[in-house]
Amino acid sequence: MTVDQTQASPAPAAQSAQQKVWDAPTRLVHWLFVFCVAFSWWSVENKQMEWHVWSGLTLLGLLVFRIYWGFAGPETARFTQFVKGPGAVAGYLGKLLKPNYRAAFGHNPLGALSVVAILLALITQVTLGLFATDTDYVTPGPLNHLVDGDTADDLTDLHEDFFNILLALIGLHIAAIVFYLVAKRTNLIGPMFTGKRGAENVEGPASGIAPVPLWRFLIGVVLAVGVVFLVTR
Image 1: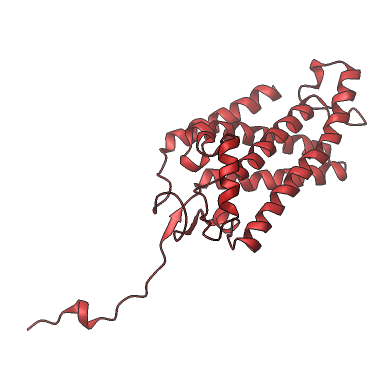
Image 2: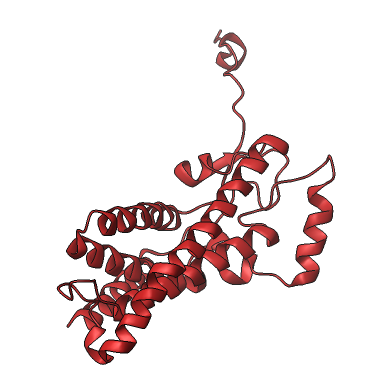
């Protein structure tokens, strides 16, 4: 007589289902954005202009990859998935104030505005930096030679002033994260590290995003490196 192992063995502890919401490239680029913006500020404040230029070029490569990944990445990384019109934003605001709020699958329509605004601000800031020069005219941006001195000075001033706009947008982004954590009990930071979150009371498929072929990622890397190379040659 054999023993029924299913009945004899204690049942394993139930594990909450996990939904994969962010892929590794999206998470890596996100945190590299954070690091490079902070490092760019530190380098210019400490007059480490060579490091400042390289930090800006790294941001350029990251932006190229992120824009590409917004078309070639998984669902939650794609612009078509989270960039919506005014109607969708208004509808989401109505849901946000209800007690039965469900976390969006990826960026919600309101958060998408913040993401797009920060990306556009980073593009503007990096582009200005490519043509800018430092006060000692020792470490100019890699495209500084394409403009005259007066234009370079004007772009440098814009580069310095526009950073405050970028900081304001980042501040709003952080404030929104705190709001969701405190008011809606939704942790947006953890999934940006792990890529996963609890699958209870959320939108999207339970399993989350589908895998993306490696060759798509490699194309994005080649594009990013290629643009930085062309800018610096």
